[in-house]
Each structure stands twice: as structure tokens, then as C-alpha cells.
Length: 324
Image 1 (spheres, rainbow, N blue to C red):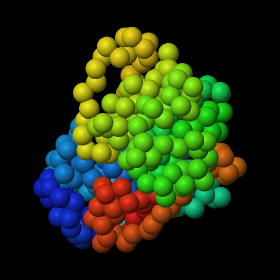
Image 2: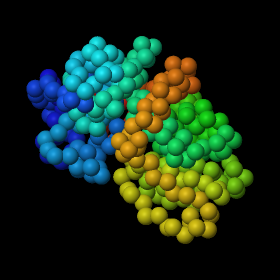
Image 3: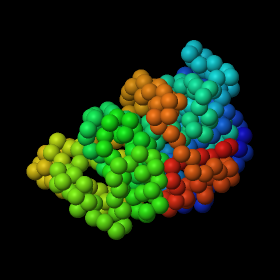
């Protein structure tokens, strides 16, 4: 099979496509022929050696796939060869074949295309977990979403609207803000030209926001930390801007809000049954049109480095998908 291989940590341009043996599933795994693989910011961090987890080298990046099962391990009873499925692989997704633990594989409804499914797994599932389990967002609450035109940001906009919240989208360009509005955002903030705290105060009449879905980091996080309402929840989702902020804890004390970490990958391992329940709900929402997966661009396997670079430079509106 062909696969994208990281031999040593470094720039994403160093990734190479190599011919490797097709893996064999262990007793609790299935082998999936990959038809589409989602591209995510953690993939780039892994390749550069900047992620919380540092895999042994060489390794194949890519953690969300959609495809067809071609082999199953001896302990797998609920999945069978020929099934259309989604899989959360952690590693190995940018390849023609990948093995996944059976607990992280789910049948894919016929109504959902492979690229839509691959784009749903990480971005929408992260936003769903963040808003439902971590923030416990309620109808009528107000949420601020940073990086709101990216894959996970757009997912948060859509899901927050589905759950009855008022959504403020924060982006870096007018084009991205227009895209966020088309996806359901009620208000917008251009944080290259406007101060987040000042705009939040204007929009909420100085009340602040109940929830922040924060995936940029740096000064954006600092402005959000000053924009919270009483009993608010500041969700720490990621640091796409490249700078991990230092949080002044006195703000949480005096404003009475919580800072809540969102590590979706760890959640799927600790609570696989809840993960599967979340995905079933998302499948239903996708089929019913309550959420959509906007695939901005498809890439060949040989162009995976370009896909990661486009994501790093925040050129994407929605999801980027690799087609092996």
C-alpha cells in the first residue's frame, strides 16, 4: 500500500509517500480500506513533534478515516467485511489501509458520503463533546467561537445553533466571517480589526458570554478570558495560533467562571460508549441537515504536506480531505 510517512520530527514538507506492507488487524481491530481521511491541526503538530503525544518514528499521521472493512480480528463480532464505516485511528490514516480498534469504528449510513464522514469525525465530534459534555450549553445561552471558519470552529457554530444558543463568530477576515454567518452565526467579530472584549460587551450589553469555544490561543485567548459572564465556561480546545497562553487565574475567581479543558482524543479512549452515542447523534443531524460538513478541498495522498500547510496557514474554510 502507499502511505504518508514521517521518519523524523520536522517540517510537514519532509513527509514522504512510501510503499509499505498492508497491516494485519489484531484480535480487537479491523482493517479499513481508506476512501477518505480528514486533515486536522494535531496531525501537523504530531509531525513536527509539538503535540502532547510523541509517537515512535517512523509513523503514519492521520487519525480520522472513512472507508470499507476488508478484514476483522478474531474478537470482532459486531463489524464485518464489506461494511462502510468511519474509524478513529489515532495514527495511520494517511494511507490506503489502516487498522482501527473495534471500539473506535462505527457503521456508516449509506446516505453519508465518505468525504463527508471523514470530515465529521474529529471536527464535529470535538465540538459536540465540548458543547454537550464539557460546557453543557443550554438553549438561550450565548457562545463565542474563535477560529469560527475552520473545521472545528464551523462545527461549533452549527452545533451551538442546533442546541439553541446565540452564536458570536470571531474570525480574522471578512470573507471568513461571511462564511461563518452562512453557517448560522448570529454576530461576528473581526479580531484583526476589533477588540473581542469590547465587541462582546456591545453585543451582550456588558453581560459577557456564557461559553467560549477557544481554539486559537495567544492574545485571542487572553481577550476571551476577559469576556466571560458569571457562571461561564471557557473551553480550551486548541492553539491554532501557535502560542499557548498563560491564564491569570484571578479572572476565574472574580468573574465566577470555569476554565474547561477539551481533549477529545482522550475522551474517546476513556468513554468509548459515550463517543459512539455522540457519533450516532451527529449522523442523524447530518442526514437531517441540522449540521453539514463543508469540504473546502480534496488532496491526493502525495499532496498531504500541502494540505497540512494550508491548514497551518489557516487557508481552509471548513474541512480538508485526503483521498488515498
